[in-house]
Image (tube, rainbow, N blue to C red):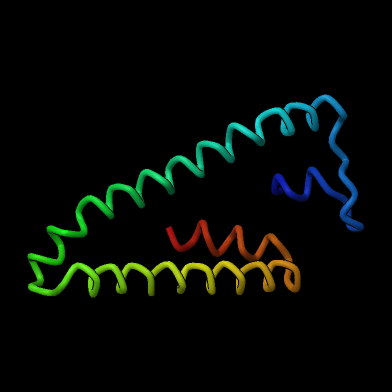
Length: 102
């Protein structure tokens, strides 16, 4: 049985004890902070390497940064698509697909 099935019933009501909920709430902010820091670190690293990438492919820095912008836009579109699909379909499908992909 999956973790999601253990935490929620068929109506989506949480079946966790109140102590488990407080632990999850306490860990939410540090987890979000770590996620934001890791994304920020990747962005800063890419920006520092952008000049070298542009020189390697013999293009202007602005052209190389436009490629990065297109990648960011596609990530936003994919995130919005996954948000819509997660509301429409069961969450177990996405968890299983993610595990199978890796």
